[in-house]
Amino acid sequence: MEQKDQLLQKVWLWSLLFFLLAALTGFVYRWGLIGGDILGLRLSNVRHAHSHLMFFNWVTPVPMAFIAYRLMKKTPEAYHSFKWCIGSIMVIGFLSYPFFLVYGYHPVPLGTAELPFSVMLSGLVMICWYWFGLIYLKYRKKADSSLSQLFYDGALVMLVISSLGAWGVAVVQFANVDNNLISGALTHFFLTTFTEGWCVLAAIGIFYDLSGQNYSLPFDKNWLIAPIVLGAPLMFPFGLSADLLSDRLLWIARFGSVLVSAGLMVNLFLMIRLKPITLRWFWNAVLLFFGLKIAVQFGAAVLPSYLWLGEHGLRVLYLHLLLLGFVSTLFFAAYHTVNARSSRAGIYLFLGSVIVLISTLVIISGLWPPAWQPANVYQWVAAGALLPSMAVVVELVVVGVWKYRRQIK
Image 1 (cartoon, rainbow, N blue to C red):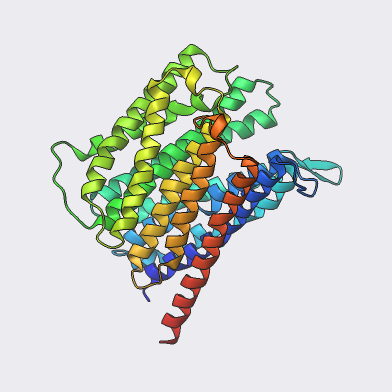
Image 2 (cartoon, helix red, strand yellow; image 1 turned 180 degrees about the horizontal axis):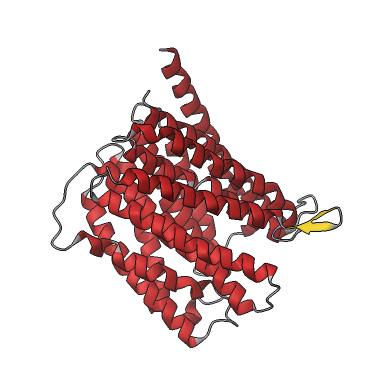
């Protein structure tokens, strides 16, 4: 097995383990929402632990492994640099998990001092992001100017830009700035730029990388990415609470959302024509989720705000449609496209579990008529949150067995 394949497989297996832990933490959060015992943990801390582990140990290392996989086709000597960098991100991200789970963003008592370990470890993770960016720049010179490389470039730019919001949150906390608008704006600037910028652009880059097809565009290829890069950072006001959201901020968010939606629609049109041959039906499901994500995003941009503003369930649905429906199913499709000989039982189960989970979130999104809600709806939502974990266990077993068989041959 070549080193690029070894790196991708190792990152995939470890990321699956962390996904499993994050998904189970998400189940614990939903269990706590319906009054279940969560061992005295604060719900907000459980949510932070769930989201940060997903960010640090799932939607960051997996795209980085695919980016490294592409570069290492021409620069295999980059293996050790990428291995240590991505490994450091996962180790530090995992170390932050117990601190987020128990303390959230609050400092940890340590003798007479108090140290915010979760914030400090998050900062180290972002420093590792910069480390990855430097490695990328070093070996990027030998890469071609393909469409996938353009999106990888943009994704890493957005990752760095998103980190500025996170650093801003840390500064506000250490400076004891008591301003909900500033802290909220910085937090959601990070979240929006990270998800709509890094996650989406990296996922699209992986898609183009694996399509293996050429398609002549009637315009400069930079127009495929420019509206997304320009619009994503402007969308942060959508995450603010209604009492902090002014008309000016709302229009800024709408404008950014229109830009991003327009860019994504053009990419979707192109991606439909460039689907990889392997697992074609599964890629159709990925693009369906992508289309639904674009539709919800565009709806928020053009529909009256009273229809969706303050609907927390709709925000939860959108985030899961984006990060689970589109990004995570794309990861599964991409890994099994590269490793076409491995068993596909895990991806079948994962896709089914994602469909069920998102369906349960539709019921509590505010879009579903209350009269049609089943009894004990939140128990069903909690049960749905367990399904991806079961699918990931199967995927871990399948990939682990396949790896073992390859080693003994």
